[in-house]
Image (cartoon, rainbow, N blue to C red):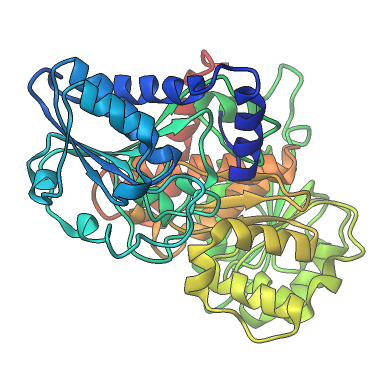
Length: 485
């Protein structure tokens, strides 16, 4: 599992460690790890052109000391000092002593085999300052390696409020930074390389699951299992206008680990025609029979006004999606106030805007702004509705009401297709019915859904039902990481 800590947490851990180390030792650890990573990225160090973009402060010092280490190994190292009067004195002296030189020639950026971005560190906020902005637009020959964070990216939120320098690799000291895991910041960070520097950190507020983590969450039948012990998920979805949403939600649910799927709604004939194993009724959720979790809302249209109260009244976990979220936004957080069972909301940013307006009583905020600050958006929604929120988008974020956040690392832009979210809802609902808590169910579902999307697309357009049909392969992939458990 990847873990990410805020700037304040990192600063506190650094201060504690520096109080126990000789002066400058922590910077030398960081520079050594940075230089070693750069050396691995170069075909060979000796004779390679390396350019250091050095801002003021410790970030520039890390880059200058790393440049000095590469120069001592025979690299031709030059440094551009963005603020010469504030350049780190020790790092600059070390670079010069190793044979490095200072330059003001922007052409060095284009000729370099590797560029070290040490302009702004984790303490910086806002986009690149005017003197640094040209480097974001220059053509490049070699790789750009960011020192802890690409300059211009907010390390805590991933927001990019102005011009930022795009990296091919970002070397993170001590821990990952939350803003490098979510878009738009993640798209500037490239590949993340973690360098340990001995920090003692508190529990991480943001985490990223990996194959083995998801495998440990997945429900597996035992020798005594039957379809009811494995969990039964109810699906209240679809309408005369959108029967396909019901079919897709059921498709995701059938491949989600539950023992059975009960469908309640007007698309019962379409569902049973496509999936004869589904248990269907044309009545409402009260007529469906006993379930361990409900999925409500995909393609329900105006009929959701009758469906949502029935489902929320059940003392089982509930996943609310699509039209269900529109109705919930109309009702506001009070609609969930009496629930004791968990609730999982799965909005995209447009639905998130409506939900926030429903909570605040104001106009919906701009969806683009919510997408640019998705960590904060997911947390705001989770706190306002006292529910777990799976915020869909180019980076999917799952947040619970206590502030825990998981960022999903899988997926593909080909998942931006009609019905994909319906499959995800059914999948997550089945995991809820199988006994997973809402944070685990949402995280595991997003992970599997993203893997299935990659498999189904394989670099070409795909459809939502293709994603559902690729889910078994996604399960097998994550289980193989745990020895096929």
